[in-house]
Image (spheres, rainbow, N blue to C red):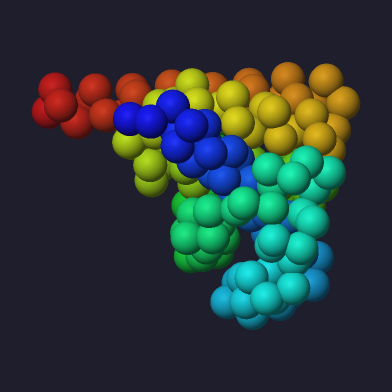
Length: 162
């Protein structure tokens, strides 16, 4: 594979994740449908200077749409997985809408994209968390996504043994 293509593809996926988290946050805050939010982002935001880095103007729009639509469709399943991985002393309702959106997107990818290495997904969302939160919150993102990935691996192993 051409290294330049791989790097560009990787950056466009990173940009898609950033845009997806922003779109999911908007959906959470405004109760506008995923379909309308995707349309708005594709028409007015993506490619129009999203983020400070010019690389973020090259968003993989299909991947962006996949994440936003997928999270919206699987919301209860994603929150169920999230609840399994937060502390007994912590309630999912205490998560702010931005953190909730970021974690849902990460969990969606862990559940639905076995073709992407777990370490890549976790690393991408930790990196995104640095754009919005402090290091303590980034550690929380790491812990939650790591927990989800381990539970998925455990569930997969149990199914293979059955």
